[in-house]
Length: 628
Image 1 (cartoon, rainbow, N blue to C red):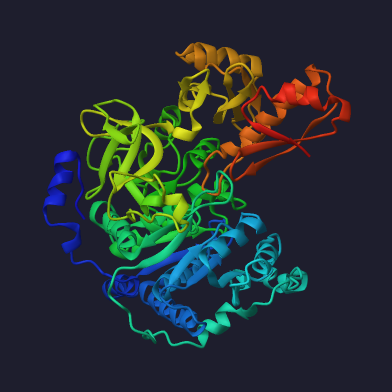
Image 2: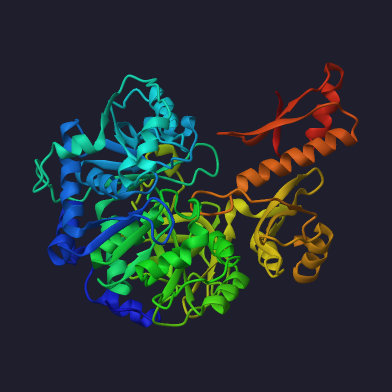
């Protein structure tokens, strides 16, 4: 393991040899085989279904992980999965999830799907990827994953086999006795053949592959994006990009003796690549607490005790999880921790300071995205960590900050904000998404992926993300960065999480508003927060016109504030108020996502005589509407 502290170190690593000439495994099976040969009986992946520090856990060694991956790949091939066929999984975290991810990538193309999605979204992804096999949960108490997948498969006729993973094996008496008695019924509503994953896995050899492990680079994974607008897009990942993420972890960070606590889901690139692939490359040990990770019962309350139990050296987290952790006492020995790594969303400076003060542990912030097979930049573990920055680009990653002017691009100067564009071994040039239409205008100069993120690079090469192009609040043509509002409100000691968006306005197009989740047990009046915002936001136009307290802000599975839901709340509130002020009987029944028009407010209860008036009132807003 070597590290880099500045751009000079970065260039030195790159100058050793071209990435293409490195002696790296060209297949996922070869990549994992090397880890098993080097680390054999050492622990690779651990999982516990409950969050208690003394609860039962299960572990796969590197040799066992390789054996089960081979058996899974052989199983998938026996079900007709070739190199270009898709094995989808709709699973929470467990040991089987890691096995299916790796086995699916060895046999064909693996397609992780977020089990929190609705059946219509799951089905749309299955149809888009042409999935042939789906691995999911056997019906289990307190989860509807099996039921949702059954409904999704009913609308995805290309799926021929459903393999079910039973979590019962992780339980101890008396729960293991009770579950079979209360297991919910799961009526099969589709024509695919349903089989037990463990039973089928045991029927296949685990000492070798039954097929040729071809050495040419190929697409081995389809990952859907967060699905923040409409149906999620599906990004394609090559083996080379997956291995690149692992190589970075081993070269710059992890050692075989490291233990990584990762309460993030294996259907997301953060856990799958920077973590699992880095474990394979380095031989380190990863621990997944509960099927739902940070969302699991008791995880937040027990996380410090779990760190003590496993003697973890690294904690993988996201800003919203850090905010929740800061509301709990440090009630365990966490002296083994070297660092915490934060990703998924920008880390507020105030939250960084709270965590550092409470734990003494440095948070290393990084940047990545699904379209790049994840990793792009990181604050150098061995160098200067600039708070608010996501650090320096990784070796073999080339960043450009560009502004589009007509049909051409202009490169931005030092500290000038533009769109972050990336080229690295994780970028599938020209064909990032499975849908051809989604790749139009996605690349600058043919090879630099346009991320849609706005940012700047300072004189020392550090990248600062300033927002999402689509998240900008545009007030009468004036661009407002929502981070300006969020960072200011986060300075209030009672504030835990903030989501700032633009609410519809008939005059200015949008006005800034903010939704706030408070620290547990704290109370504060909205008027106080309004005054606080006005005092701490330097840009007058960015001061929110509306602040609303919510018990909990909507979040994605990896802890990002889910701003589309906040926009829906704002559209309903503003439109309902406009109708009431105009004396029109009616209300917004729902706000839907239309593929072409974006958010659309569906208005119900309007008398026929008021239709013209309705059109006049709501026609002044930019967000589309229609009668329900």
